[in-house]
Image (tube, rainbow, N blue to C red):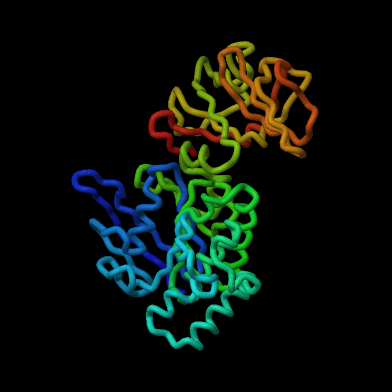
Length: 358
């Protein structure tokens, strides 16, 4: 398998630039996920790698080849889209082998490759069925199989699970992870779902407005975000953000103390030396301990997910905190509670640039 290297890659539509000088190296056999909100440029970047969008500036290499100006068909890639795009009049076997047949591959070789891929994807029992007789997950497996039989250097996935219901999304996520383990292919996967990114990726690329915010392994991005944006985007539910500032030798952070006495004891929190008079404090929901006998926060909404409960609480200044609780019957809407937390779990961000203060 081949890796992919982007060097100062840019994309413009007339005077509007949507991809801004992206530099990225994806190793051979790596599972790389592009993630970010709608409009961040992740699908555009994937289509540039595929050759479906022209590259306005910079270069794209697949392996040692410069493919910046190479036609999509000659790049050695296969792409799986959100839409299955299966031929309704063809069987599963015919759909999977269509591309090989169009390229003049011998009939026996086509059958051998299709049968081998069908075994990997557990499609052997469905080979004579038409797409209308398949479930959504089975259709997506056929679409993946059609790409797999071509033996590409790189697989590209553009939000392939978006059309599936919640249960099928989980099943297919497991199938794709298992497929990557079995064949060791280089895969680039686009999604807006950070849960998919966290569970599938060797490497996550977080994009925002056509710029890479941070690149790293899932747990590196989760535990060590470089910006408020990454801290808030990676993790579900999102990281809590509280305004903080220095006053009279103390740190004032009303969102963390319920606003009871106007501020938090500054002797307990020491912002980084790079912090100015104002900063943003980040704290993940699982790093907050719910104090059912405390005060200062009023429970607004309680989400019970079984073994885990998320408590949404607000203080008198309407600052909201999300608290993760392992259990079911801690509190109910309207209760007054307090919180406890380890100050070592606090993150600090510049309020203007949103960059991490270290």
